[in-house]
Amino acid sequence: MSNIIATEVVLPGRVEPEGLTVADRELPPPGPGEALVRMEATGVSFAEQQMRRGKYYDQPAFPFVPGYDIVGEVLVVGAGVDPALVGRRVAALTKIGGWSSHLTVSAGDLVPVPDGLTAEAAETFVVNGVTAWQMLHRKAKVRAGQTILVHGANGGVGSTLVQLANAAGIRVTGTASARNADAVAALGAEPVDYRGDVPAQVRALSPGGVDAVFDHVGGPGIVDSFTLLAPGGTLVSYGTAATKNEEGDSRLPVLKLFIRLLWWNALPNKRNASFYNIWAGRRRRNRFRARVAEDLGAVFDLAERGALHPQIAARIPLRETARALALAESGTVTGKVVIVGDAEA
Figure (cartoon, rainbow, N blue to C red):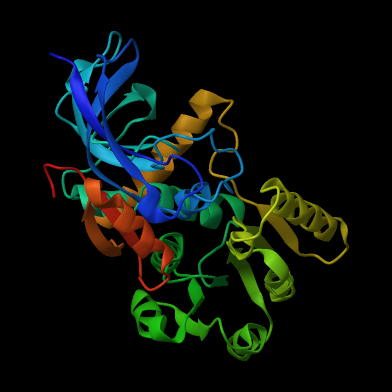
């Protein structure tokens, strides 16, 4: 097979979405343990929105190709990789590099996509599904009959969290703007207007507090999230969206958040606080991969059985990724903005 010419969307520096550039690059054949994948679907997550501001905690130096996850078809494999993978639809967490028509991925990171899911549907559940599943079932360990609060319930992770909780028999309250209240209710959550008095609204629904809060916002509102917990409840923080436009060292808001969470855990308050990072434990590579495959497999199974419904906010061609990024940052959509490859556009 001749070398592939990949079309890549490059983030050249701290630019507005329209500052993204498109370039072609020749890819060599995959090396040992690798697979060459034709991207069918990727997307815009909050990580890429932070990266373009230079605010993602451990992003590479500019310029680079963003793209946190992909779904695609395996075209060719390197030495030591099962040749049966060729022609299979797979998913992978990539962290960067996904905004490309073709890319080389370590074969150990590939997770099979069930035949009953389209590429776009599967894409909405990769980083969002792993994140939501692990926070709900591994971090907070919420049980059937309990109640949770999901901030940003109309977003990619939030909408997946709501559906996973419903599938597990968990009651959900979700914050969103008033215009997205109907969409949040349709997902199966009791909507709360985040522009109003959130603590008062949540306490009216759950006077005794909630069993878990999932907070990607951080900032001053994290205090309300913690105080809304019932005794024995768990706060899972997984972002600092409130500080995304602040100038200065991008590590400082995260450091402040860590200190606050540690302080709360040191208090005799019978409540728990933790930070979720999807890449935690990746140094134990085989264990990390096994968990991702297990958890994403469980999410895909629920989706294939109809218990989860993909929330696709828009479907935009790769060469128009600037438009996809701007739309995702607008805060006007429910679900995930999906970017599709040339063959699917």
